[in-house]
Length: 441
Image (cartoon, rainbow, N blue to C red; front, side, top):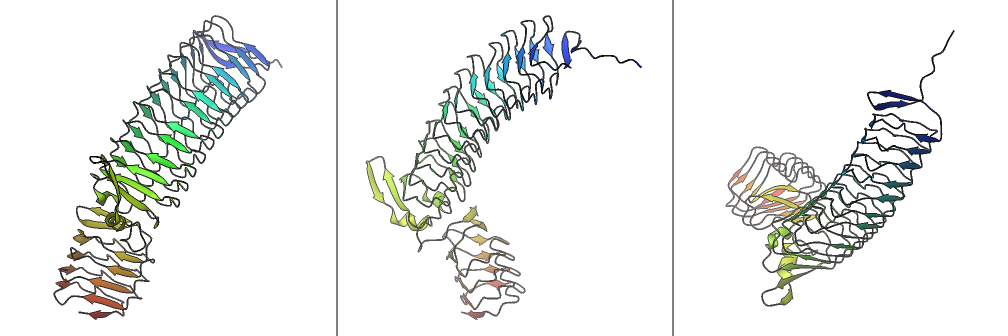
């Protein structure tokens, strides 16, 4: 019986397709132009690789899971390194990006958890999705001026990354880009950046300061969620939208400023900010935006009139915003004067002025509320609006109510008193089914 030994380097048309050796030092043969897909995949013996000047490209996952690879010498003749080329090279400690490479591809260094240093040149324009995901040994990264885009999860879970030197040329940072970078202490947004995407800094629990540029218009949902050391933020004029739970669980946040440019602040944006003491906002800001945004009862609201340079405590809007114990409950989702949903946590709920209709199922299955007081503006209570609110005990309905639709209070078994005006309009079929309430007019 005879055996045919495989060559150490399998090649085809100038492409290295497979390495079959077991050497620690590997010198790729001169004359090859490309290192193909998975050519060294899972090679456990190699510790050092030298690539000749003839090579122009390195294909996807070429060196993936080379667990003992510590050093790679790549010439500037290489212009392309594809996705996942060094993914899982857990002992790779240093990498110099070749001068011809302009894109750091997706997953290029993902899970290289001993990578301590990366040297970029000034032609790199894009850092791809997951490029440095789980590179837990990285402590500092300097991103050159040439970079304009940073992809999703690019530096996610780089738990020892303390400093990011990022140029003003960056115009896009993808969602989760710095997710759980737990050692990151501060961040300055680049001048060209207009949006902080969802979960960008989620769980960056050592971040104390963020400096926003004047070009930021959107802070998306959960962008700074669980940044528990963040103490103070000042949003510059130009910010238009703050997403749901954008600053949720920022437990050290004590002072914020909201500019007049804001058009939308979504529900729960500043929930569980337990240290929040001062909220300053422009006198030109629509205070309706503040409803349902805060759940801390100890906030002091200050209206700032920049035109005359004055600051005054805004007691009216403290109540309006739902920030005091005696205030209107936070957590109303209102669209076009219709209360669509209640996501607050209070027992006593006062429906805000201006609400015309309570939508179907708006409070359904809420076991927290015990009392509901409708404002004079409400004229319609939708089908099943309060159904299965098992602990609801009292409802006060104003005289302007025109319609209480079917099953509006069905199965509110603790309901004792319903105060309703004699001027009330139509009460739907079985609106109070399975309730023992006494209706008082």
